[in-house]
Length: 245
Image 1 (cartoon, rainbow, N blue to C red):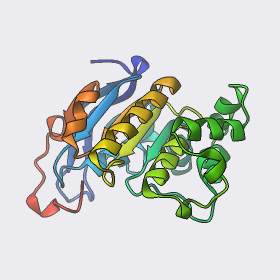
Image 2 (image 1 turned 45 degrees about the horizontal axis):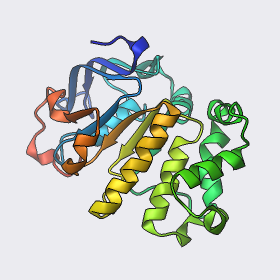
Image 3 (image 1 turned 90 degrees about the vertical axis):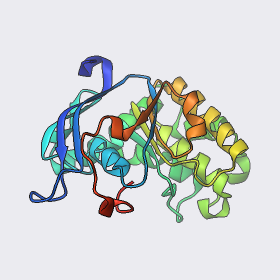
């Protein structure tokens, strides 16, 4: 199994339960994700996918075990440091996009750089300004820059909002990009086109991609197709179905 130095993610001996008295819903002996790897993660409703992502992003803390992301010992971070780790190291494409309606398209894309000096510096080190990098990413997502960059995101179509969310996740080249059901609102042809754009930009930024989806038809495009249940050694009770994903 890979060590942390050549893995973007390394988990060992992890246990997570909602309370001390409840049964664990995560029990992972070992899991590694290589730098630059693209993983398609799936599992039925209730298998704990959202919990798994929340542990990686330091939203939740395990009761036991080690989580290393980009050589950072995530499980030992204090609360304030967890927030900074998240914005520095992880670009997230949310299922519902989570764009801020009171900001313009460009302001939404640049938002991570307002909170992360690391990601802002990564942009400026390319020789481009934040505005220029925003335009580049919007163009890479095949969006009409001049028409939309100053609009509020609520004026965009669902497909356009999705691509803005991807541009926001990618700005400043975070080492890990997590996409949580990003294609659920798209038809088959649009899903594949979107995936091609995402892959192109992730490869250009040398980021790793953890892509969560129920759309098994997309799995063959990834380096690894992984059912969460293959690494989670806990049988979740049926009563949890719907409470977790």
